[in-house]
Image 1 (cartoon, rainbow over the protein chains, first blue to last red):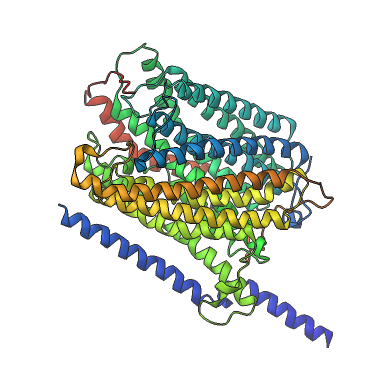
Image 2 (image 1 turned 135 degrees about the vertical axis):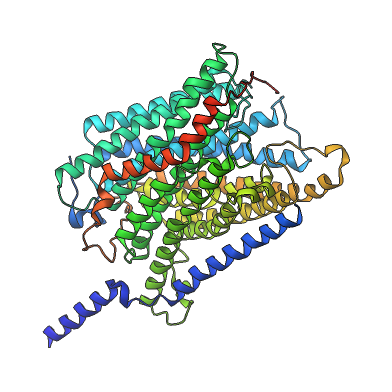
Length: 53
Length: 558
């Protein structure tokens, strides 16, 4: 019984440190949001630049 | 002498060596002084620019502006970086040897001597040339010699740090070097390579010119050599903050960092791409071909890669931690973060500021679009939400655990609360001030200028409201500085404890994985760094020697 528990614990620990098993939906969204902001701010400045040419 | 390996590196019981601690503390005392003096100067500048205040005792606006820039951007940051890196090496690699420590102290005293020489010239109004000391403005030679000594002092200290790092490698052949030690080595190598530019211009151009040995100076060359150093300087400030983000903050949360290998790769990319990009500060300068400007713009954009790698890593750490605490939704892991721990809150607020800071940086570096913001107060807003928020707030967070760690004390409830007040007050002040600077800059308000109504011009009257907002923000920032000083005093006084505050060092999810070999191949890293520099700078610098550029005599406009 305790062996089984140890095995489960080991498995959980392995999953915790395994990059492929992480749930990173929020991280993906936040990084995409930063990318979106980057495009938005850059084009905002670009439009202003073109207006003042 | 200690030599830390394996689990010792991450143990909460592992400490910065006592002898090394004294040197760290000496550097941090300078940080506190510089913060107070520079912050006071900053407050007075914003008050002057509001149009409601005039400087007393014949103090000049540009004299004050020079003091603000030199004491904060150079002196405060350099002393912090030297102190923090020595602490990081002593904590993760092990104590410094006598000779390494002697180099640290020699560097400290040389930096101190240089700072006092420059400070004396600024106080005597002999050096109101701002911290960028652009020619043909000409300061007293002692000012340039003082600045050169500050740089030489950092070299000496850095030599001691590099010796400590390479001694660890020699004593522990084949082992992965401790991440924090590796990061200090990257920052130090970048520093040595980039300061050659500023040392060359100060030694061979400014000092002979200010002493009257030569009559004129080649301005294009001096500005190019300055910015060869000036942009990596930004990363020299930033990388110690990234060291805290990558290697300390996960441990503060009680979790692991995302990837040791990714962190090392990000630092290597900063080493490669932070130097061959200085010309993006000279996009409207004459005398440099558009092609070379364009090339350096492209190289500048390469820095976005390690920046976004860092953003990804930090979000991944936060999300993983939040999910372990029971978060299930898309973003509810934010709620699980330790919002009452000042070490985390200071850093997190800094990270938030870095998002618009990075976005603004991309706009600034976008070739001709730079004309939109060039020499406007937008730029001042930009560097206040980069070095003046993420960098300095992370420095504060580092001092929050480092000062009690090296003086044998703990962060108590009062100190933690002061840290939180510091974070919120700083955020409020910097938010108001930098927003006003960005908006006024887009409306054409110039930087590096005292209050003026510009003969009643309509456009200038639009800027005044923003200037008043800057004074309001500046006032909050000054209050935050007072809180910071009180916090530092609280952290270094009072009863000592047997179990001092931890210097947290995190393990990573891929801790057991071997390090990617080439990132520890210093010969290769240095060759690639120099190769990129030669590509970016050889032709433009050669043209400055061959195109018969007329020299300029010195001017003193104050």
